[in-house]
Image (tube, rainbow, N blue to C red; front, side, top):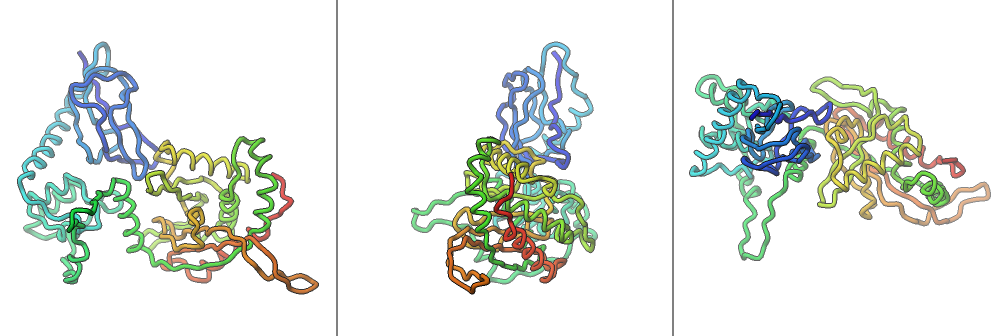
Length: 428
């Protein structure tokens, strides 16, 4: 018999870690080659990890909700034949670590836990267990400077804090909270027994965390503009059937709007930036995030890379591909990484306009309102008259730390100008 190390595979250029969400197989189970053994989550994308060999699972090194680095061994599979022998040092190093973590969790089952629901920050089960064991309150835990992704507190962070706790603390002093705060964060307990309490799933927790983080990070301000898209509506109605017959793709309004946004970002490159401390990072590529609602009500933002280099056919194919894979849960981790500006279509749900929250670390997001038929004043050489036009609102949220009202307003105005100047006789 030989033993094979199943490692967390590389899941994308920008993905360094993943969270285990579900073990499909257990210790003692027999698996076949390429059979799914564990489900993991990277940021907002769920993925399945298959085994590279067939055999029997003899050891699982990480538990559900543990964060695993790419390349780390997550399970040991006993095989027959010439499978690669497991590294003794690796196994010996991993097993005690996991055993110690499990021991901490088990030891704390009988200890009253702090109420972590009062915190807007995400803490892994291991960090929570260590906090309980060491008597670290939620308020104190929130002050630890995390080195993980999005400032998350890692195992090393909390252990270093515990080590230095009695000496010089590496955290900021506690800030007293208003007396009303605990009441507003009380657990939603049903009084009459008729209410239903639903725990947020992993993705909803992450969305909540990102939204709070964005509000706390960026100084949000909005600009609104109304756009006449009558020419776009006429053009699409004229070409959509032939387009679908020729390309095998539906032609929606989204790629047309994305094309205009990409052009405007090329005109105003200081909207295509991110902020890192006191530095502004000017992005070379224009990668448009496309907010999409999932069937379960959650939100995901796949990215159209180098959007300014696509014609309307390429943009339509990119939009449809990402939207379809988002609905069927087939997005890859890299599909949601590297966005430089985001567009969200609130008009899909009938909203006239909205005030979207910036997708960090970007500095702007554009909301597309519903297209409506409205009476409008039409100016002609013969005089003004009232006519029926197709109009919509564009809502631009931007980070006032680095984007002033003039730039934010000019950018959304340029998008409107591109849309209103759309050539109704354009070839596709």
